Amino acid sequence: MNKDFPYIINQEGKAIYYGKILSEELLAHYFSELLNKIEWKNEVVVMFGKEIVTKRKVAFYSDLNIEYRYSQKTKKGLPWIPILQAIKSIAESYTNTHYNACLLNLYHDGNEAMGWHADNEIEIKPNSSIASLSLGAERKFSFKNRTTKETSSLILENGSLLEMKGELQKHWLHCLPKSTKINAPRINLTFRQMLLK
Image (tube, rainbow, N blue to C red; front, top):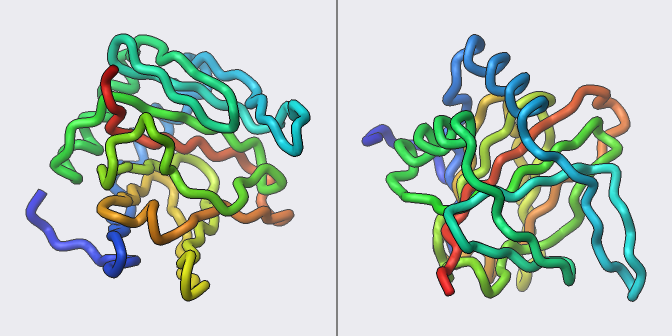
């Protein structure tokens, strides 16, 4: 894609918001397929030395022999399924990047959220592109600079694509805040470039 898209962040890394990239027809189809065909599991994270089972559900798909460790847990990538490969190709056409893994999150409503963090695990290729595709409920998404504490937020639309790349994960945190007003589910796909062992 040669079209210019606005930078949400263009200093100490880049965040590009492509807006809505999927048709209404595709949105309904993809959401239903992902909801029913992905091997969703509740997330188990370690907080303050204790295992916590989140309401949010996750899944990790990838090329062969890719593992991803975060929150003191290791996930082994499941084999790609056709629906994920189709969506991956669309994301790759916008970002001009090849991805070899995808972490999916299912948020049932606005009470399920994600606190401030960076996607900077050692398994991820340094300064690589992460393409985040949103399906379902619109949600606020925020960035915070680690040093200046400057913040920037946007609303992730149904069917929209956000790309994060460069040194963004080094200098910025991001989060998905809670919202009691949101009663509908959201599926988020984050396509990544993982290092091969």
